[in-house]
Amino acid sequence: MISLIQALFRKSCTDPQYDPVADVNKDKTIDALDTSLVGANGNITWCQSKLNDKTSPCTPPPVSGHSCDDLLNLIALHLSQKCGDLDYDPVADVNKDKIIDVADTLTVSPNYTNETWCKNKLNDKTNPCTCEDLLNLIKAHFNKKCGDSNYSPIADVNKDKIINILDTSLVGANNNITWCQTKLNDKTNPCK
Ligand SMILES: [Ca+2]
Ligand SMILES: [Ca+2]
Image 1 (cartoon, protein in one colour):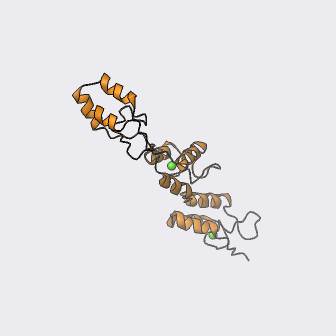
Image 2: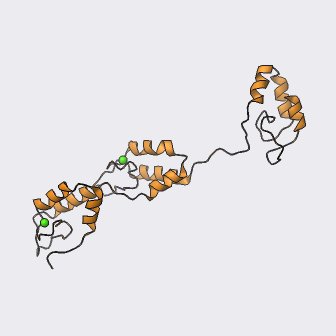
Image 3: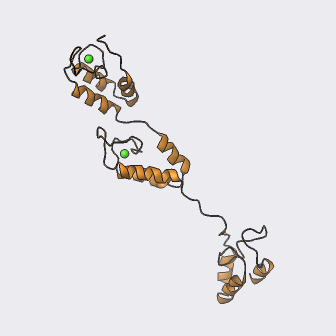
């Protein structure tokens, strides 16, 4: 052990000969401090464990990506908001279960050091609430027909010029977020 330290004396992280095993106290330089440490703990078991310890203090530990912090901050900002709430943000609803809560934080936690994973989630604008949004729109414009000031062509999902139970049933029958998103984007007006 001592001879290894002496052979590599004064080598530090930037030297190609630097050997983390000889840097016993892991302070990035092989020097007298390491020799003293071996002297103070001079028993064969201790020295053997140090000889097996290839941990290098030179490689910095993986740092967390900013995206994961951004994602956690977004969850905190929109906490307890659910589908239909004004401040609901589908990006913060990481597990897309229609509510932003601790379950989303727990979904991020095991992936906290995975910058790519968090970045993908930040870019995932999938909105699990499109059908709720559509049903709320129908409710807000219920029984309105062509000519009424409060008629909404979007809420008239089947485009039969009146917003009623037939539109609600159609949403119920096609209850998937992509279909509902298409309908929310469909501004075709049957009254014209
Ligand atoms: Ca959620
Ligand atoms: Ca209709």
